[in-house]
Amino acid sequence: MSLQSSALALADGVADSVGWLRRPLSVDAMLALAQRRSRLREFGDTAFLGPLRRLLAACTEEASLSLVGRMATRWDVVRFLSNLLRFHDAERQEPGILRQPIRRPIFIAGLPRSGTTFLHRMLLEDLDNRAPRVWQTIYPYPLNARGGEDARPARVARQLRAFERLAPEFRGLHPLDATSPQECSEITAHVFQSLRFDTNYNIPSYRDWLDEAGHLPAYQFHRRFLQHLQHQRPGGHWVVKCPDHLFALSAIRAVYPDAGLVFVHRDPVKVLLSVAKLTEVVRRPFTRRLDPQEIGRQESLRWLEGTDQMMAVGDDAGLPEPVLHVHHKALVADPVGTVAGLYRHFGRTLTPDAAAAVGRYARQRPNGGYGPRDYHFEDHGLDGGQEREKFSRYLAHFGIERE
Image (tube, one colour):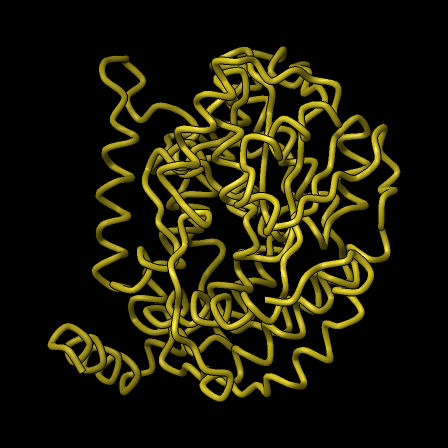
């Protein structure tokens, strides 16, 4: 155990001995703090309060939050609330924000570690495409109302470095910078209906509730979030990505009836242990109880459900174009050809300049940018043969090669 880990464990022990780690997380206190910090009072629609109370109750009762975990949860929630206050204030001053058209966005989904990030980042080499960046999802509006240099990217870069000190394995598993495109689960987290929380914490009651409640309010907010970004900088074709879109396809169809949908396919057994390891690394700073084998079983079940969703949809998600199916092997073998095929599928043209930029990006990242990893099924409570059998129907359905 490192000196830092020992110090944090000691702090957790002291805080737990006085009962501080078992105290309920107060919604009212966080609302008041967000109002003080933002100097704004009105949220407008307060439908988020029920999901927020449910999330904080699950974190208190189930997540075994560490001292760092409680502080991080409080920071997250207050930031989301502050952004909601700012959104309502901006809409009050500029009603046209909510009339911003979000036309024919492309949604990329698939199992984590299957190549969705590689495809997404290649598409963003075309300057006609855009996606929310990490710094924008944390601070969607400038911090300094008086103008001047935008401090948001630098502040977020410092925050990422601080997290990497708590989770030093994170960057090797999921390289992320302040300017990287961010997954949509960070957007939907603003209204506290997001599977992002299920990754950060072991909160099964929250996940069960979210599965039952659905994702429509979260994706209505997702559109609102893009409208705010587009109002600040018009133009560009939205291309967004998140594995969790697999669990919200009906909401996407309802909110974005002209969207395009891409499924990226890869042998789940090849990526499952990497997904479990990433969840383990992300959760570790936030909890006093971490069970890698429990995480392995949770991730296996979760992404088996994800493959079921893809099979249920097949080619027809009820959107104008059929689903585009991209196989990881073809993606890494011919990145430019795969991107060009995506453009043709959705009635767009990949320009020579954009194709050259995509090719340069791909050449710098052979095999999608991921190197070999040495993971073992037993470390995460899984049996390789059983996992291969479990996902065999998905492999056969889409003709996915085993790796």
